[in-house]
Image (tube, rainbow, N blue to C red; front, side, top):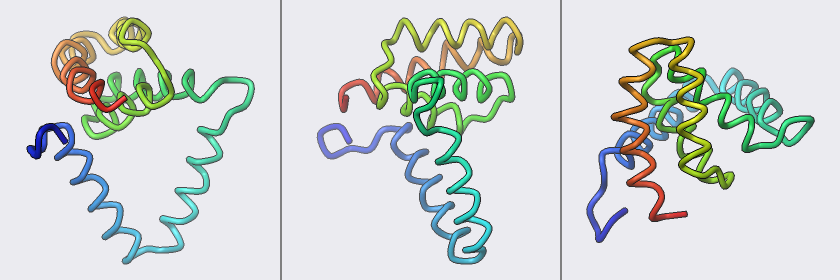
Length: 120
């Protein structure tokens, strides 16, 4: 949060977290197994955690998933990705996802980097 005010990106992340919490209470077995699966997918392996977050960001853009775009932009920053690395991953997504991926890159991703960079 910035000076006690919540940004739109932080609000979206909170909204997603609350939704996951509610879903987990209603469907604990599925939520736990999904979480375990995704945790295994994003673990360090032949690819670094940063590389996996950059891939996930590109997929999020290509599939036009706003919450995942925010979540994985944050994941990229959390794993130490530079703005240049993030934007290059976004450019690759735009090469596949066309205008929709590019529009999210020039708006949402840049907003996320700007708002979230101050916390990293």
